[in-house]
Image (cartoon, rainbow, N blue to C red):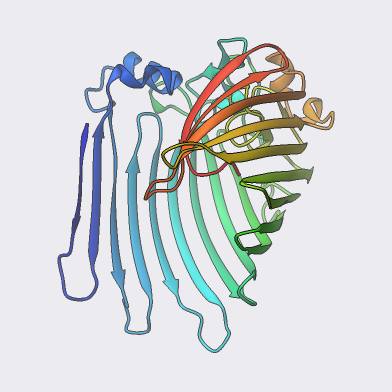
Length: 363
């Protein structure tokens, strides 16, 4: 249960959005590790989740937009302030963001609990990030973004205390300290072209960690994603291919987790493996059902390209994760104001089974 409201406190386009939910044990089958964390704590507010957003348009009279977003979950939180300046004379849209977040690290450092690789764990990553981005819309289909970011990551354990290792004894930070620091420059290119008959999109992102001080991470990280879709009678076929690699310093918490909702369905998050490199392939067929519903048939395949052991501490190997796996299944979805609502049932090659419930299409 919960409440949701929007408030307009002023005449300058100010807006406050509020949402508050009280989570009950009904959610056990959807996110068991989250409810596990709620049950273990004595904090009576731990079962409350929600968000608050404040937006002010035209902050300095030049079309600027200022947004403050506060979010609290049962095991995570996100506090973010963003100032966006519109593109002027082709200079590109600029944005400055300050972010402090706490997110579970179960996909890499969780404790395995089932045949499908489902996990829970007390390891959470506290990230403080300050970044500046500039985005150019080259045309209606193509955009490019350049940015720079400074970030400090602190792993937290029980009661929010900083920790060095997880419960399997694997190191969490690369530096060996209670935190990792990095200054990252990034470039990203995105292209999307779609109509009623076809869809084609890709994005390529390159990041470089700049070691401006001893102990700061130095690395190159490359990620690429391609998706192709086309009409097939009354149905629509989708296929995608993703890959990435890291050269240089790699903190275990920033390795690529393989398995889960947007990876290999049929496995828990990160249950296939954790790698320095990865490849993912997915194919899906969507077809109409009754009352506006759509059915899906899908198959996913993922691998760490044999790079799991090169991650500091080999967190995947210690958890018995093989590094390669596939899954297949069926699903149903319905359109809503928030995007498609999906329920997927998947089986993996180890005969593990998972049910996924969520919004939007798999990435």
